[in-house]
Length: 548
Image (cartoon, rainbow, N blue to C red; front, side, top):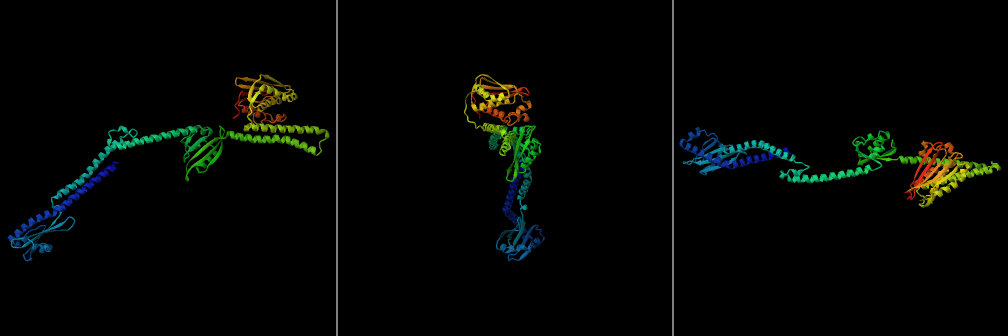
């Protein structure tokens, strides 16, 4: 700004000086002919008097310096001349007592012509070259030249000091508080604009801050992980979910995204996204299993960054594993009785079975068929509980009476193994599904008989606390090792597979119990010691709202 201000001042001064110079030159041009003619005519009179007194000797011996002279007789004869060029003006001079003329020889030169008639009638013509330097105006022109040489540096110096002072005052303005500079009244429009701009910027900054806060609140409350990286793969944003799921040591905002996880699968996935291709992979971390979804943020053909989602798929993978195990177990459980039935039926069809063995073979078919029916019924019941497709037919159910009915149903099974049963407690009524509650008691009591020792016993206790009913089934059976307790409610899971094969059952009983308890919004606990027995405790709300 200072350079522009100085340059502008110098240019203005230069234009002013040039205009002044040409003005002086024009004035000189206007007054130059008149002044030069007067001077020439004075000199011409002196020359005329000299010629009249001394005649031709004066003309021949005089030193006329810069003046051209021609002496003519009244008849036009040339008596003397030091410049033949004056003959052009002879005819005009002879016709007049006094004659004058001027002609321009160049831009700054003029030739002045004057003539005078003497007393005897002779005509004397004189010519002289006139320039602006011959006039007193030369001093003015010289002064203008001096002015021209002086005014420019002075103007530059003054402009520098003035601009420096102005700029210093402008630099002293506080952009955040322009109203403090009240002495700069001439800059009030600028200060008003600064104030308006500050308000606009403050409003925009506040909007950006609120947007960032909202973005942080949304992303930090996501169960999924989210990361945004620039084209150089430096992290621009990263929520706590990403740090947790990737098992990273800390939030790596501003650092390379590869610092979040050092696995080859993660690196390949990120590199593919940076190359413009969406990519995904599964990572195994100490937290569990997570799915990485990396997508490029494209603008036309340019990748401006990448967006990475991290989804916890631990439960989904576990469910997939359970599904595969369930399919395998169901296939196995169905295959065993069907193979037995097919083998016996084939033997009967081919007449291989002796008549005396027909009854026993028929009993085997019936036993295996019952096993198949029980398995299908348990799978159907479990599927209904899983899909929440059991009708919501809650009714008042007396758990003590239901437990008594269940023990009676299992009397034959318990007598075969010489296991005695004991029911204690009090009548406790809850609102629930009678069929599902019956499944809970039946499966717990059935397991208490199956996995009990010979001549053992089991006990069912029905009690209640202010808002819950409690079912406790304890036995004196083989117990469950501690390392298996967390898995006994999985479908088809068996602690001792070799022994469990000898015991009738589908392997779905405890899984049905678990889902039935969940259906009633209850809680299920188990305590067991290997070789001493187990205690299953079920707590059910007296008025359950139903499974959601």
